[in-house]
Length: 45
Image (cartoon, rainbow, N blue to C red):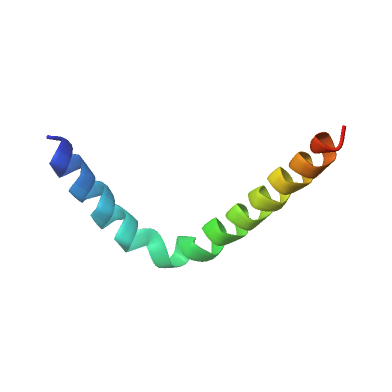
């Protein structure tokens, strides 16, 4: 059961990966910058 779900998710991800790659990379970059800013800002206090 679990293996079938994993395979299905992998196939679904492979089918939508190319259009989402730009959006996901953009969101990851924004989230990474946000986390870094928070770490530096709250880390100095």
